[in-house]
Length: 139
Ligand code: ATP
Ligand code: MG
Image (tube, rainbow, N blue to C red; front, top):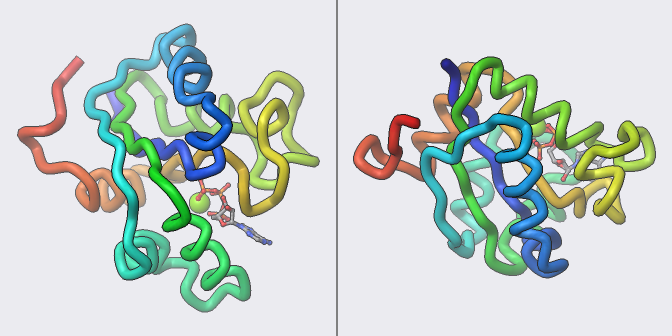
C-alpha cells in the first residue's frame, strides 16, 4: 500500500471539474485518505515547489498556484504514485496520452489541472506539507 499527494490546481477548480477528477481516481480503484480545499499564499507555494526554485517558470508557477482555491488530497492504493501519474498524463498536455486528465482538460503547460507526487520521498514531503497524521484516514 502506498500514498501520494494529489492537487487539483486553481484552473481545475475554476473549470468545475473537481468531481470529474475524483471520479477518475475512484473508478480506477484509488482511495481518498484525506481531502481539503485551501488557497495558498505565495510563501506556501514557494515552499511546496522549492525543488523548482531555480527554474525559469518558478515565479509564474507559484503565482498561478496562489491564484485561486486548490483541492489537496492524499490518495492511497497499490502503486498509487505511478497510477496517479498515468491518470494525469504528461506535464505538457500536448504530449499527454488520450484519456488522461491533462489531455482532456489542460490548456497550457503551466495550467495543467493536477499535480501528483513523482516518487515515495517527494510524496512523504508533500503529504506532510499539507496534512498531519490525524487528518489522514487509512483506507
Ligand atoms: P506536477 O509536479 O505539478 O505534478 P509534473 O511533475 O508533471 O507536474 P514538474 O516538472 O514537476 O511537472 O513541474 C511542476 C509544474 O510546473 C508543472 O506541473 C507545470 O504546472 C509547471 N511547469 C513545468 N514545466 C513548465 C514550463 N516549461 N513552463 C511553465 N510551467 C511549467
Ligand atoms: Mg513534479
